[in-house]
Image 1 (cartoon, rainbow, N blue to C red):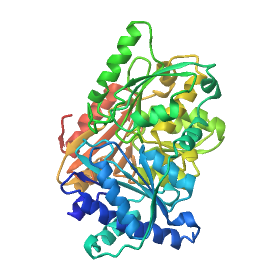
Image 2 (image 1 turned 30 degrees about the horizontal axis):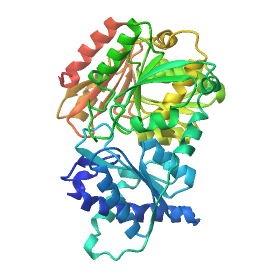
Image 3 (image 1 turned 90 degrees about the vertical axis):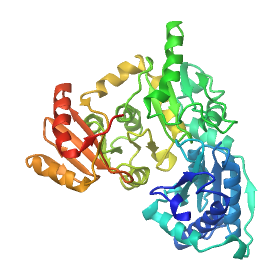
Image 4 (image 1 turned 60 degrees about the vertical axis):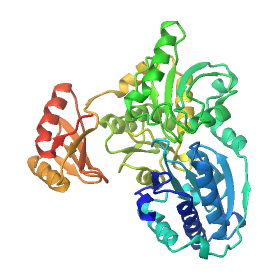
Length: 470
């Protein structure tokens, strides 16, 4: 069953089958072996280089899975720091704040509550995916049996780092908001996930922030709605709250909906309309590039062309990336970028060690609003330069054949294959990515007008297979 729980970027499966406490111990043992060996190979021999941070989300299975994971690490000789109930970006912070060999968050992110898993990071909170260590952890975990191992005597301690985490994040909130000189009213749906713990501990008490809280109680370990803010139906209750308050003359400056482990969020404007994450990035780069003139900005290759245009207009360097946090974090580090974002709601920050953080995104939006004299919808309007199709899925058993046929059909178009196939035909441009797990191709197309978008989606559909309904 061990092989069933390892995915491309993390460990994730249903609980208690195939993921259970026994497997958690094995993965803890293998993870500790891997992280300690990596720290030693990188030349680190200070005491903290033998420490590993472990946090967990609020799922019912998380306490026992985390306990067995930590015990496996201790039995492998690691010193384990139990961070307790925290959001995933908290673990990234702790790794860097303490100088640990790495860390693990016990979570299944936006999956339903009967799922769970482990997000593994190494030193400096660098991600561990299938090609960057996860396969080795799987190999090491498969080689050990709990009953046959003599513990190497690692130890465990608990630490409360919330005060340090809060202090770090509040550095990025505009002083006028912190002092109360600028007041903002924000609606937040925490999805009964870890934002329900993080938001109060970090942002309660900020004088200029009034936060209306929806689904902050995560004590049951269950979700009232699916904790995936990309699904528009999951935004409905937040939108209803915002509409009701606006009709009574108590509108909000913005709304936020977080996923289960609070590493990503979707932002809504004052009318309750969801903002495309590429357009939000295009707006946020204004503040980012004022603070770091000429810096790089990383965006996923599905993003609107307006992102790269705006970055250039503001004196920055646009850097395109493959989709996925492993690739985005690497590109941000390689390019020495200041900020990055992808359509999934993950936003990455150099001042968060190139990691993604829902809390840092919240701070960035609040700070950008602090100096605004217009509502958010009007602030975003200049970023909406083109018409987008949104992501459309097509089912086909021959994904590579379909892409080859599509490329051949437009010989005069500019193409590149960083992630699937990207086509720029001048009047329209598109990216078609391959699903890693399903016989699906994912199309994102953009043009200057809706008629061109509709026409080209219909034309490309002939090559891509059967269109899958939402």
